[in-house]
Length: 261
Image (cartoon, rainbow, N blue to C red; front, side):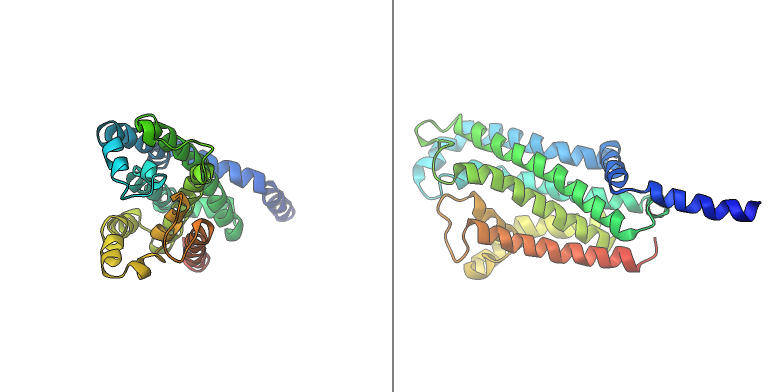
């Protein structure tokens, strides 16, 4: 009797693993892991906090110089908001490598492609929602202190930039997610990406502005400009970032598929 009941139960367990159930479980992981959920909330907190700290003091004087694109200036907090987005992607992936969590995840979802795809989809959705909200928060908070230099939501590029901020933050979150699955360490990923965003990108830009234009962060942020400069436009620049994120996600998928849990 024991020989006949075991095979009958296995297919039932496999049938229970549906796309909807796996997506739901990935959302529960993000919501229940403090580091992941805290990083996601930090995207919104940084957007509001940095805007309130910067624009009442120097918003109008900087805008008055005319040295910077008036729309791009509204997204100054993005320099810090994107760090929170990177942390969200890294912690969402690295939580799978704590205390054998990945073994448990793959035991529950034996199809590694389904597991990885669901993880990417849920993280992308969360990052997009938080990113778009952060985009509007930065836009309206900055404008509240710019007086005559404010940019109306109906002006050219304004609405595009708000939604584009969300798309950009989603893509760099996925870049961080894929790299963490490849390296299996959030600390290693953040140690690489944060200095790159804060230092290396500007150093390369100082040496060769043309080369820096094609870096994932510089290219993606073209979506925030009212009048982008250089060879990339708003959407082509975002496309460069999307291709970079896709390449790293494929590398992360290779690591999940090939390596032991």
